[in-house]
Image (tube, rainbow, N blue to C red; front, side, top):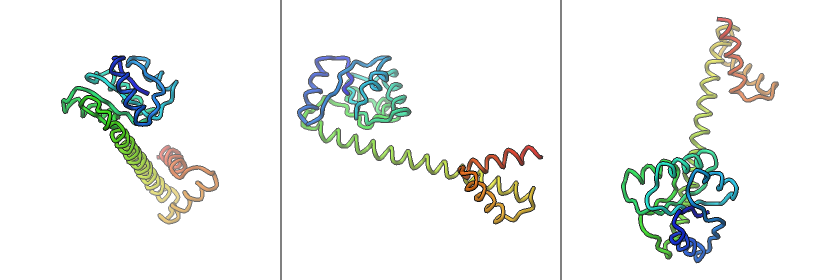
Length: 187
């Protein structure tokens, strides 16, 4: 999907993308309905061509990155480091601060997709690590409460939580949270 409010510029970039084997499924103007248009078309990638990304554009990219992440390449005339940093923080995978050079389009798209995939893998890994740390924290607290209230050893408390998880077919974190809620109320 190509996003640009300048139809002549959009046509040039569209042609450059098509010449490199990309299919432009839709050309749209930026605006408040951009996210709805993206949801409707479901493109594989977003290419934004703009003079300078404004706050609304970057907010749209940020919301897209949060709810429906896609590789986003932005061609802009603006070379300000602050603007580039804002664009990258909002989820732009590739920021090119020059006019479109058709012979570079394919390599720019490939790099942006690779950066997007790497970022998503890191984001998933971070989420997994946070989840594991939270489960560990809940497990430690639940074991401490079982040891205190049931006079169990740490190993017995651990085995009791694991058995409850298997018997109830619930994640360890949920079982530990339930134990904490019940035993904390008894204090």
